Length: 293
Image (tube, rainbow, N blue to C red; front, top):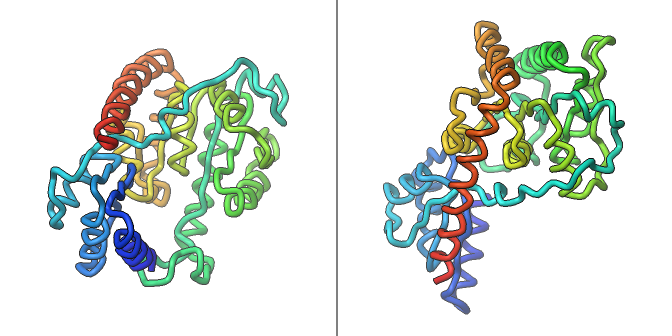
């Protein structure tokens, strides 16, 4: 439905203004030939179209979009990197001195595909979802062994807060967990808070981008390609896992090793992050100038 909406909207707008620019879109898994044609139709109605990774660009070119129309860069959320000392926030200073941030997302609780967007589909408990939550609780408990406190960070306030609270209730009573449920924290406050974390374990990609942009070593669980691609861009591919890895007990050792590595090699990871993000920010600025020509 979203593809039809955007195709019709852009076609209508173009009747009145041909100077339409697409900014930093990602082209995710698109299997249906009609869906690909709709994407191509919408992109071809624009003057220039910037995507946030080269894989998205390659897909569009393969589907029939002229390469000269496209610009490949990265997600512009990396530009928000400023922090400002000790944040004023709802967690105490003793937590700030020793915590791991985790930005979870519920998953495996609806059917993929179909015409109706996920948020409008009926959601039912499933065996995969139950196993996912069980292993996610185990992951939180393991992470707690590496730090003094766990801070659960909801990113989608209408979906994640209740999920974070349910996870906090499930973990062992001796695991110190705080849910950052306040929806009135300013963006700079959140970046400053996350910048103090020993590491971020992210399921919501933009929570992970905020953390890495603030210099925080991170482990990412991705449910579509954009998470994997972003960690390729920052030279951290070994710390990115498909979300399905949490369903497989044999992956537990590799996941735990990745968490230990980003903590134990924190200085080296931070240096790599700083270098790659500086480079990506310059590329992003250049792509934006190119987009606006």
